[in-house]
Length: 151
Image (cartoon, rainbow, N blue to C red; front, side):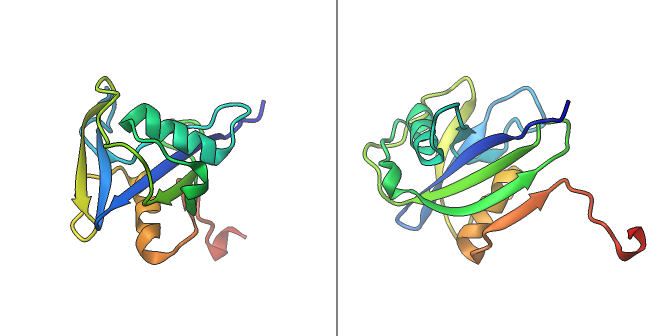
C-alpha cells in the first residue's frame, strides 16, 4: 500500500513586527522547541478554513480565512513521521488576544521580533518562517538528493 501524505497548515501571526510562536510540549525530540500555531487539515475542510480553525483552537484568535495569504509550501518526508505537505499562511488581521488554549501541547506562547527569532525553532516550520523573509514559495525536507553519478 502506498503511503498517503498528510496536509498540515501553519499560521504566521504577525503584529507590530513580531511573530507569535508556541513552545511545544511533547514527549518527543521537539519538546521545548518553538513552532507556529499549526495542525492537520480535516476531511471536507479547505486549507484556509483549517488554518483559521487551528488558530482558534490553539490561540483563541479568530481569523477570517480571506485574511490568510499563502506564503510557502513544504514537502516533508523522513524522520519516522508520516510524509506531509505543509501549507504556510501569513496574516496580520485577527480578533482576540492570543492565549495558550492547549497547555497539554504547548508550554507557552510568546511574541518574538522578526529580526531576533529564537534559534530553537523546529526545522520544518522554520522553512515557512524563512519564506516570510525570502519569498521562497516551496521547499523540500528529507528527500534524497540525487547526484549526477546516480543517473
